[in-house]
Length: 246
Image (cartoon, helix red, strand yellow):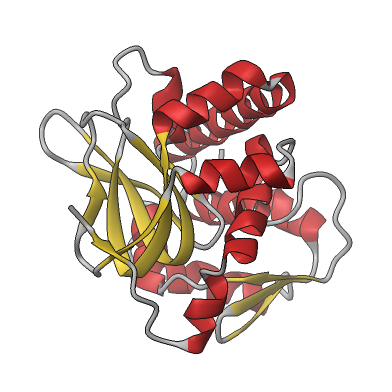
């Protein structure tokens, strides 16, 4: 069993206050229709836990008794193939949910594994209570299904790019998906908190290839980079790389 979180700093202590956790739940699209009182009642059935770097929050195919919301830290979602090979789905940070896809699986098991990449604190929500929310709140259920449709679209896009697209197309697709959907005014600045090696693994390329692709985009004045920030200067030209790589 994982340890109950013991906040080591005032900033983490603040993030774990009941009103902050309530707001974090409200930021989850398929829980946003709940009232503040309903979110408080859901939190009363939940717990804040901490997981050390290098541990696994849960494993693929294990019974999905809990869903999680990241408070702090970084988690890698990975799908393990029958031959034992691993494919990174994505990395998630504060506000992201983990394990919710299990609620539409017949066996109620996790569809991927979750590896802790940095010291992480999460809210653990009982899966049964979350299913009850979907059963009794049509607005939450509708948003949940909409979220699943977007997730499926993203995964199909990933599959198409891995099998048909080149490295640049995979990078551009990733950058565009970090931007709000619909028309976006540029320049638009993204926060890139992943180390290059982690992002390269997620995009199925080497760190050296990722660096070359970023340099190419910078040289053509399509992006600018500064530490953990990347600014998209010309979205239409960026999209041209996506079309050319298919």
